Length: 64
Image (cartoon, rainbow, N blue to C red; front, side):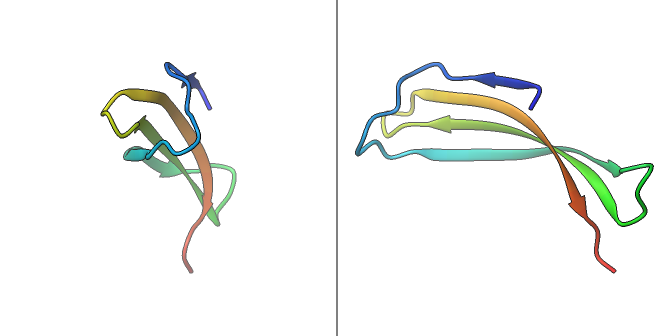
């Protein structure tokens, strides 16, 4: 993860909604069987308040 920001406390019985956007997809370079996927995330509670934001990068196995 390159950015994590928890702006509010999450409590028991909160209802959380998560929005994920794929921001980049590219070859892994040194691996023929995998690629890099970058995601931006935003989590809100039942009141619509942002409680968590972050971006993540994953190494994902390719098909075939």
